[in-house]
Amino acid sequence: MSISIPRGTQDILPGEVEKWQLIEAKARELCEKYQYQEIRTPIFEHTDLFSRGVGDTTDIVQKEMYTFTDRGGRSLTLRPEGTAAVVRSFVEKKMFGYANQPVKLYYMGPMFRYERPQAGRFRQFVQFGIEALGSNDPAIDAEVISLAMNLYKEMGLKKLKLVVNSLGDKESRIAHRNALVNHFQPRIGEFCQDCQNRLEKNPLRILDCKQDHKHELMASAPSIIDYLNEESKAYFEKLQKYLTQMDIAFVVDPNLVRGLDYYNHTAFEIMSDAEGFGAITTLCGGGRYNGLAEEIGGPQTPGIGFALSIERFIAALNAEGVELTIHQPIDCYIATLGEEAKDYSVGLLQQLRLAGISAERDYLNRKIKAQFKVADRLKARYVAVLGDEELKNNIINLKNMETGDQVEVELTNLSNHLQEIKG
Image 1 (cartoon, rainbow, N blue to C red):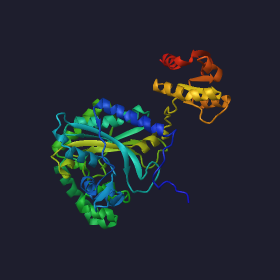
Image 2: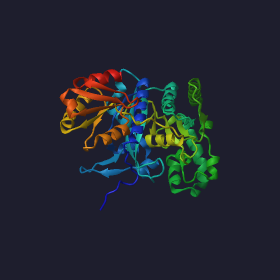
Image 3: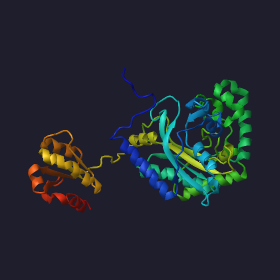
Image 4: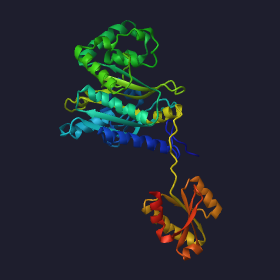
């Protein structure tokens, strides 16, 4: 019986994985410029971290987590998102005591959610995200948003839409919560069971319901903007001012809510406006979470971050027709004639690679013509031809594959010669 890949997962093969590497490299490069440092957390955590940190009313916790009991009877969960684990580490390792504040971190790695696989969505997917912990300044909210926007733009995306909203501070959210309960309660029986359960626990999540999003009460629901107190209004106005200064276009959407319980003040999403991208247009989402560190046992610590899916990033690149240069030519291909030359080429190949030259040779006993075809497919800049006779005379013929020019080089000087012409 043949064994196939689990549903909702994918193999990323050579020729495609290079796109991932380019995106990952650009993300690391930008994080270095913005002074974010990498953190790596375990792929599984105690289940309680996510039920407390992400929120037990969210779809993630209620429906999508891969949870199991280990041999010690402990409930563990494959991480469905990155923020809770990063903040857990921040608290556990007492990073709030670091001299340099805020603490600016980024992560990159696989996440796991049990959901219906569809275009751009997988049960195992890769997220890149950043977290800035320790600052209440709306300027760092703008910085976080700008890093995400710059990453997309520097990889060639143009059809982007940034949507921002304010969820307000605790006082504003309580006022808005009460208004939502009063709005939905008389007709809550017309909504799905999830929304009915959310009415008392977290009515804001009703606005994020995929099943009832067309219900008439959704369009007339109280807007959080109308319930912002003066402090929350001032915070949101400063964020918009900073984004304008940064020349980052945005749209305010009072209906934007994030799917996790720990958000307050700034919430944002970056969407693709590319034709044919699909019904789900969100590429990246994030926002401010000033109560998460306390929720998992740490001191009061403001934080803001975002997460984006590499899979959806690549889907957006494909939708816009952005071509990434992924096939890097090799410097030299060694073609051999004769057994002694073939044996010698093993050590010669090692010399070239140790000298910093990308090189390859034949391993299938091909004829010389076939070896040149392989070199051509690999886009080799040079082909070094070594026969038994050349080996005896300590020479090797080096052909420039672009110009067709060929020179005779001292065999023991091949690596130096290639280094010089490579520059």
